[in-house]
Length: 325
Image (cartoon, rainbow, N blue to C red; front, side, top):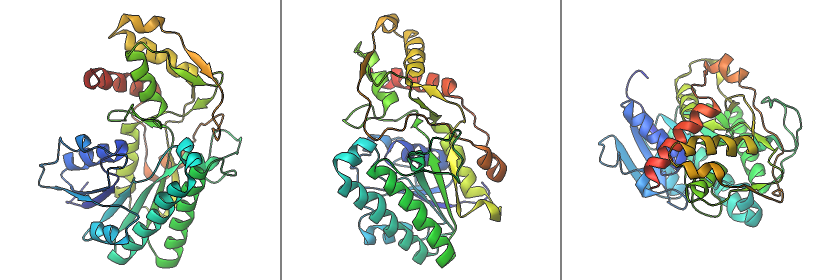
């Protein structure tokens, strides 16, 4: 990136946000992190907390004043703050809506009023809902299957309206099952990959929802970082005020996932190979299959994924084995 940019990363203490903070600081950019630490962790920020180009603002996107304070002087917003997890939204739809919709709108308004150059936000593959077409292309979606999916679709609608009405530049990145270093294996709503890694490392049987043939386009964190950087850098007028699948473009089942995890973890602990798998009931709100087309991102942004699922998984396992001892 040419020239020093001022970048606000909301949810910067979370899994994706802290990786983005680390990346853009390493590129010599100025980074402001806004986080209320409801799901993020301070230890995700320790490596660069003393960097003079890094500023932490403890605040909540549900508070408009916090949003206004955080966008002052910013060139770009990378909005990652959200309450993730389909099950969490089913258990508590009101809080998910407050954070993911009201908080999103607060930040949009603050960014508009501050004259931020471009607003880039984490959208979600859950937006495809009950659409059965594969691969998923950005312009064909179905009905949402969870409160979480509704909130992420509403984000896209608001971004589109703000682009049309106020002339804002927005880009939505529909993340597909992102995984990698710093992803939290703990808690009731932990993502499947770190959760399974931790269970296998403890010699516990992972529980697969259903028969294990549900499939996902698991996407390594470095591919997500690349998409955020491209979204900042593009000067292609056709590339803004739209949404992009942020994925690899390959599909693997949950059974595939456990098989690969056993192979990679067995390099560190041979006992992992013999751990049996437990199958439980399907999870409410789950989409059976997910596979992204990344043609639009390649064509308009120049996206070129650097990590396949297996390559990323091997790197993630190495990180967990080094950090979860």
